[in-house]
Image (cartoon, rainbow, N blue to C red; front, side):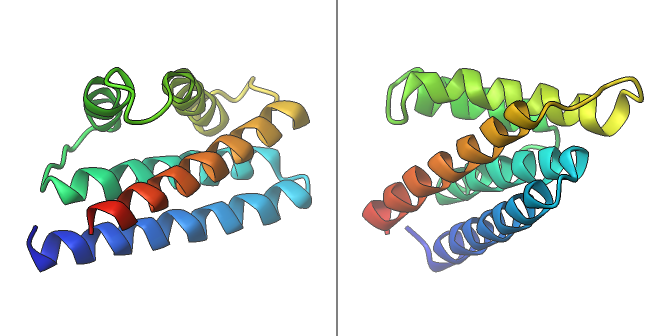
Length: 131
């Protein structure tokens, strides 16, 4: 594996961790719409970290998630239940950012943050093994 791929994976993982810290702070301060956004981006950047190892990238979020689901969730490299949770995170982020009628629930946002936390831990473990 080339050094650029490793460095990009590490960078994206660190970005995911920072997004998670931001999500946790926003959640704690009851800024639920923003917390949903940051939790989703934490998940997204963690997935991008994995794809960096393969030197694969996509312009659209749904393509990143679709590739990850096909190659890492359906093959059970990562738990299948995370595939559903990632899909929910994407939808909640979309609703939080673009649906002016969307009212976030505290439990829902907490679930988003927990999903991000779990995925980051698994991604970090995976990257450490690969590098």
